[in-house]
Length: 403
Ligand code: ASP
Image (cartoon, rainbow, N blue to C red):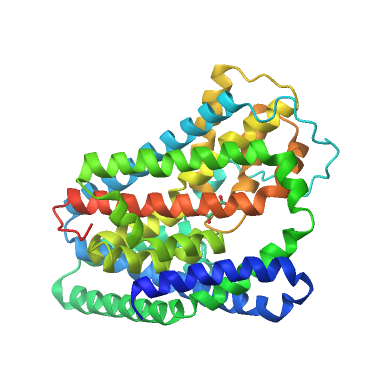
């Protein structure tokens, strides 16, 4: 099955699912199971994929110097793009001011528990007390932490032990990628099931939601588009001489999957495959940059958080000072790093920023109605930024790419 064909199949599935979900709302139960099967299959791959990808990635890097250089570039790229994204979000919401003069009722129920974990606690929990439990719970940051340590010390062993470990982890990684390719074949069916369910859920009040929340959604989406189609392409052109259009087309399958699953983690296997096969990034680079990116690089989420917090503040008539807005930018960046690559994670971490600013947490109720839809957009941007990072870093390492 060629890549163009799969990409079209997914688009057709997407279009059909919208029609089906809207007109056959009561019958979506017949197809939503396909979405569940697809998601479960992707989730099944994640833990062994991240572990094997990072261990073999670190082993393949060879020296500590290479690891340090690659690590610094990757983290640097993630921080810079996250900061730019947050700044775009703050700027857009200040220009458009979607919450000023909005008559959205304020008595929405508070559905979420405030996330009380402090930054210190989050950092501490990166160290797993039991790696098998972390694997069992797909605790991404802990798995990444352990995999780095394991890969790093494995690379310092003598050849008797290093060689078989390297072979074994490379082999496990290959198997995980094969399973991924197998699962991808079912993407159109899975996506049909997933999206039909989402459309059916939202079908009732779609028009109402759009009219009351239109300006807010517009602000988030326009800012996301600006970041994706202006900033990131400029970085690709200037830092790597990469053709952004070509790279975008090469990423169609993971981007559509991110859009429909709203999960960076679930999309990771497809992202790795596309970046390696379609854009020509080496396994060495992609297996280092992408698992880390799926967890800590969330430009879309950071941007969304900035817009949302300011939107809620505007509705409550709170005027945030410049200093407070700068605080929003930085806390949004940190919160996006801490957010898991799963649906609605960004919504939960907004509470962190709101409590830093002393805002009423019930305000979150205001944005719940459109959360699911905006999650689709921001997750795609999260993935897009990861892949842009992968090609830029690969180019800076002297790789010859296909884009
Ligand atoms: N769903 C997003 C992701 O997986 C995280 C978020 O909720 O913002 O990338």
